[in-house]
Image (tube, rainbow, N blue to C red; front, side, top):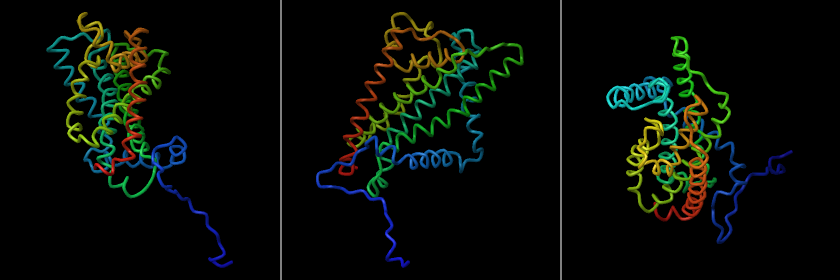
Length: 285
């Protein structure tokens, strides 16, 4: 059989007049292999050319936790419930790093990937979703460092019992990821016209951390400021995250419902804005 007789079916994408390219759920599933490839690429590239490589997974949260221990526990004398301060701070730092990295990386989607977006078609939402996936992989070994620290305290006689509510941990992380995706997509859509927003993101996340119960429990918040904490969805999610690990104080039904409602709203608005921006961003970047 000659080569001319072989009919090879090749995938194609037809752009019809007036048709808008956007991320359809069917396309996201069809390009799932690309999602896996991007997650693998970003995960490997993050530490490939560093001197310590994967050891940064262990070093970063530990050094940050020691700094918080000195500043907030020894100097400021902030309460950390019944948990050892080092465990309290490390548990908060690793989950906040997960959230803040998701937001900041998703926010840069259009600016960093504009050359690729101009050349080939694929669902643009694959990029921010792959950033979320990469940060999930980064979070897992850091959570392992936290468990090693808990094991050390248990061996030294300071018992720290993990609760059976660990199964709720993926749900809490999923809500955080959804919040980060919605907020990051909203910022990404806005940066198409206002690039200086990327500068604000870093400052915003740093300030946001101090109001998200990462360095102190809700009981340490003055009563006149409790309403601000209630309106902060990450505060409730951080509480639920610690509660699922250690059984510490957790967000009650009201704050948690408010946090979930705000997350769903931001996710819907952020994805809608992202979908709208991806149609015309090449004309502005």
